[in-house]
Image (cartoon, rainbow, N blue to C red):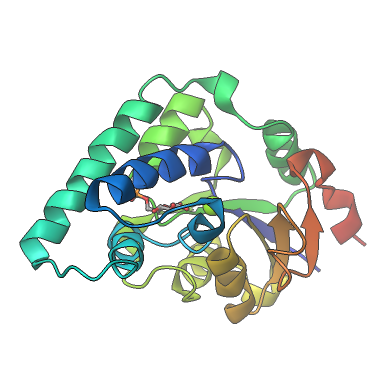
Length: 213
Ligand code: BG6
Ligand code: MG
């Protein structure tokens, strides 16, 4: 039986995945490397420096660690500008209903986001108190697709990995859930998220009843 659902944030609960895309696109243009939505799928769920390294690897120039930190800081400033006006109106359809249905069914609720902006976004959305435990970048050493973030959430929720359902929009995120030994619900395109156990178009299609017995 399932005892917890662990949600990703960006691209699952709110459309910040699009803001990350816009901010990286601007940076890619600035350093002169090609960038599109298809390449962006590889960045979803990947932490800030990891994403930057993937973008810079598309070009031939080399950068010092200092230059990389400056570029990452620039991207983050642009991202923070994009999210500065977020409010509860930016919750994706079905998000609150999904969280509340899990709570009502008596399961625990976790959040697993590698974003250093996760707490800011949750506060803007007004949903911080809906989670029993929040794991963000400050609590883990290895990002997705490593299972550490989902395993940490399960441990802190006091449940076994096989008792957890993970919900993700990113390829790296689904890989992290599966590596943790959990059931993976993908949110998005089934062709992209082929490693998930189940793929839904949005949280409006999330049904906790399907997991209860
Ligand atoms: C993930 C996003 O949630 O957080 C990635 O899917 C992003 O696109 C990563 O790069 C890190 O976010 P931040 O806010 O720490 O730069
Ligand atoms: Mg995501």
